Image (tube, rainbow, N blue to C red; front, side, top):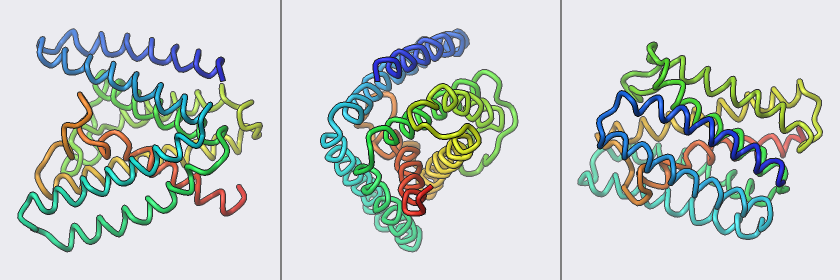
Length: 240
């Protein structure tokens, strides 16, 4: 686990270089916001990783907290809009309930698969943003999430797949199976982010809340992990 933590630190160092290059063309205010987001993410990564690796029961309680906070954020957007678009809210509620049920089970799995899923999701998220801001031109879903680009997606995916190969000993899977597993995590992580972006656009807000500095709400930060964890839970039932 200490070797994995060293790998995390390496990726954070690479991320810092990426943020430095991004911030060179930003205003001072935007640069400060980006660095706040970076350092807040560093704290979150450490908290979640340490709970997964050394205190799995703590992570189980953390999953319950994240799911409850996410549910309250979904309800808040609906009620704050004056109860508009009840069909959108109902659909989002049902989708979230399905993902939440599987994510709850995810919190009970072995710490090795927890750590693997979390790290792949975190690396994918981080390097999607970095590669997207540095290289992004071709928007994927401009009406739903205008900041997502093909370059960002593939940049994050390639780094995530490379990371999975470095973590092969953690799960002791053959590399073809490992890449297939990682691809599923990437797809579901992206889907989770896309679904929450769609819901926010329906109510014309940028973030679910401002409770996490630089990130927004709990769903803004953990939507990808909830979806990726739900995927892992699903395939665990299939004995993958």
